[in-house]
Amino acid sequence: MTGAILLWSVAAAQAMLVAAMGCCTYRLIFGPRAQDRVLGLDAMYVSAMLLVLTIGIRTGSTVYFEGALIIAVLGFVSTIALAKFLMRGEVIE
Image (tube, rainbow, N blue to C red; front, side, top):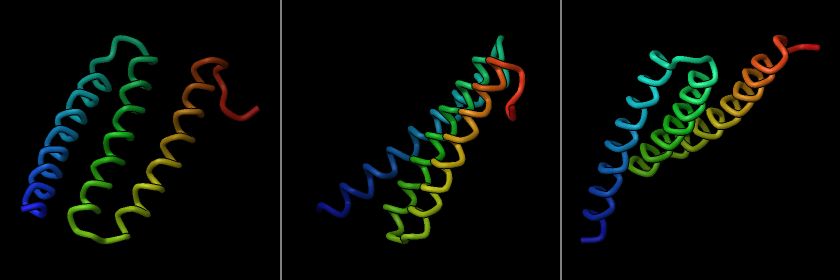
């Protein structure tokens, strides 16, 4: 019984994460300002990372957890670079 509950809850979480990524895509495409687009991209990489983690939970493979870690690090660095670009107009000083 516990395995079935885990399987259904992971499937529900994946469906909600895909819906969240759809909302982020909408904000990324139709955002009125550049700040809205950066926020949509930031939320999208977090949703993608969590989706990869739920796939890793479902399959039991450690490769997905390492992929999620890479997504988290690259997403954080890209968010910092985009925020710096929006504030100053340049990334590298």
